[in-house]
Length: 191
Figure 1: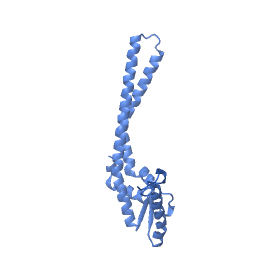
Figure 2: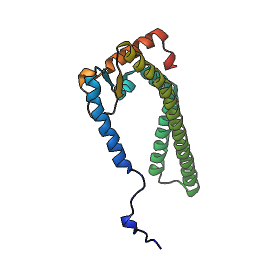
Figure 3: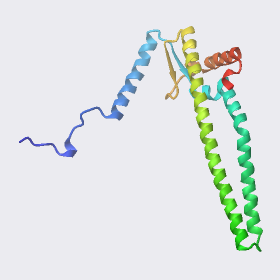
């Protein structure tokens, strides 16, 4: 009968994920200088800057803010009303037990209503923001592709990267494309 190796001496049958990732990254790092020597043009795009400054996303954020502001203000008003009720309850020394119970019940109901509406508002806003962001990301991808093709880039990297020299950063060119597209198409993405 063959002897099995003890658990601590067993070898894994596949590559270790951390090592595998390190090998892939090392291969990519070693390939970049080789590509550059062959005349390959490489560009870099700072996605955080694009997502913060793309006029389509700025307009979408402003439109959502306007749409959701009345509901948010209503929650703020109800919070203030709840706080006034708490203060009245603290200051009301001569309330009978039934009146105190009724006031506490009303405060609990208002507090639950505020919490429920705040959660619903937050969830809806998050959903709508993500939906708009995904729609606009397609426009950003098109912008990157067209700028890369028009200006002869062979490879475009996006953030996060460990380092990108300012000389290969084409974020401003992409932002300009997005601004031009936004002006051409009006405020369609801000809906």
